[in-house]
Image (cartoon, rainbow, N blue to C red; front, side, top):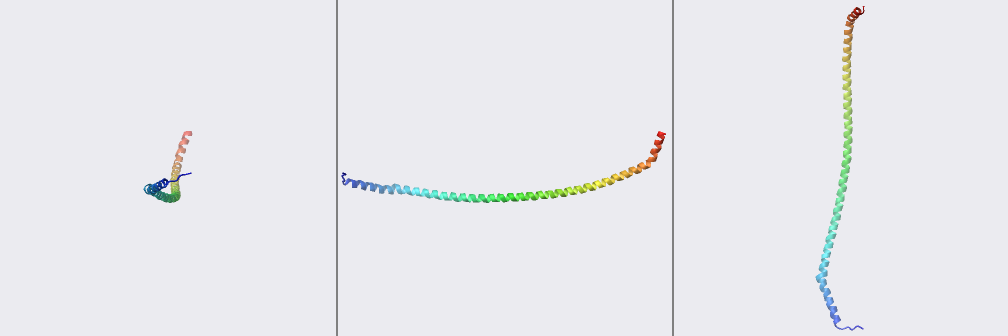
Amino acid sequence: MLDLDSSIFVVIAIVWILMIVLDKIYYKPVGTIIDEREGKIAGETARIDEMTKDIEKKTAQIENILREAKKESTKIKEELIQKGEQVREEVVNETRDKSKEVFTEKMKELEEEITAARETLEKEVPVYSKKMKEIFI
């Protein structure tokens, strides 16, 4: 079987002392550094998540503002088109009325000229008829 002597107790004591020393010198400082890094990573992750939510919220607000601005611009555009149509109708009606007035005035002038020409022709008809008689007879 196994022969146990006192050296095994010495080896166990050395390994146990080595574990205590390594724990104090290596494992605890490394564990502390790892815990600090994990804490920083968790904090940064939480901060990133918060910033992402904030960005998403602000993006949604901006999209809503843009949507409202588009609606408002469409409404203004339609109002301006309607006002433009009204102005166009007014201008067309005014121009139509003015053209009727001008047409009426020109027709009166033309009738006056026609009347004057008839009167002139009626006065000259005897003269021309006399000349025509002379030419044909």
